[in-house]
Image 1 (cartoon, rainbow, N blue to C red):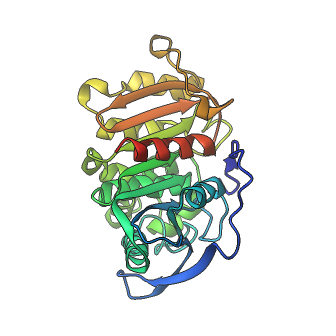
Image 2: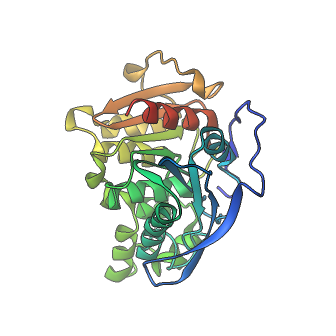
Length: 306
């Protein structure tokens, strides 16, 4: 997870210069502390969309995992902010805490106060640990987002601990292992997106996972499929048996296979896709990674069809 791969980059040669993407600080409503972020504010007299990008599990606000998203914003003349939200997820102040949630809301407010933002066009994107936090924000503040693009996320911290992934970070963040005490168990629950996703049913949400993640990567795709189930209509939910097949065989169950065409994924072609209401889940040919052109294409499509 510390080295989340970018599957492919935009063909554009446009770069984000130091003059365009600036390091700033904003006041968090959580505790009135000054929190850092990278911010791009285009010169404009009209209200523009805002994209909020979230760093990975072990990253911080200077991480470059979403360069393609930055390029999209510069190309389109949109605002972009990449907050720190308390840095790597290995302490109680980070990892889905109330501080994190309020930091991200405050980052959005900073952008609104700094320039003219189209409040109906605020988008969120995150990969891996950033996907985890994006799911959390979709559930805790659904009123903010016009669209949320989520890649290879964690949705249940207790399950992830049981799967043996980043156990040390989880113990530091939640105060112990699941089962150690009621207080510790409560922390795992309060910091997990599954606890809040029922509130995200009105959010335009796209959850993506590579079929091999959990085998060659750090997050089993059950996290994405269970997140989808939490916001999907009952008739569209995946069965426990189907989810188990996805995870154990790194393949699509035979009765769910279908031809899907989506050129934005390139060689990471979609293998399975299901839509329910405003939520879509896509399982693609790949692992623990962001397919950057697909994320860009989805955000632009959502914006253009609003």
